[in-house]
Length: 216
Image 1 (tube, one colour):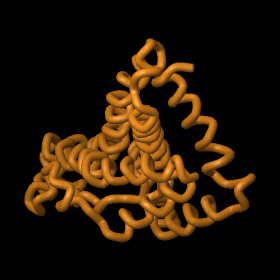
Image 2: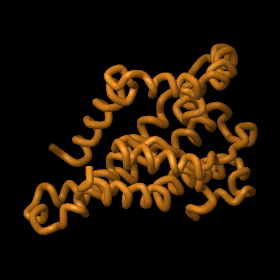
Image 3: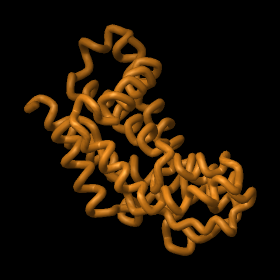
Image 4: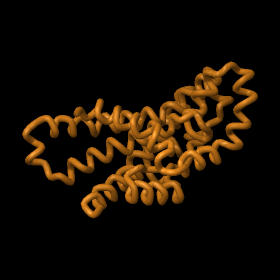
């Protein structure tokens, strides 16, 4: 645990300064490109981390990732008015998907040098701390990407799901899922470890994507 403490603290700091701002900026930019200037009006069309910082979400990210290596946290939600978006529900889905996709881009950007280092003689020359930070940065971005794509409100994946459901079905189920979605998430994550969504569902998916990006 002690040898992982410093790299985990550094990665949390990088996520608060870069990862979360990029995620929320991606939402804001996608919305702006599709005709909704709400995020810009509220000063959220920016990479400034202060504009996107949520104290509770930041604290939970630090506690969960430093304590267990499985990050759970959030930034301040980006305001979007779906009525202004071109494409209707599909436009809303594109805005929602932009955030998780930005985490995939960040993960891939860190995976490139990490893959190069691990597959060359540089692995013996680069400090272990750097390799750990790169690996953890890839992993936490994949965690946030996959987690956010779960089709449960208020996560981004729910808006993607609603866009592809028949309109009548989406109209019937959306209010119910939005009312109880957060409770459902808590139940899923606070099941016994052997049955938790993180251990049984997300873990294998994350490991597969990590191996694909980093190799081996």
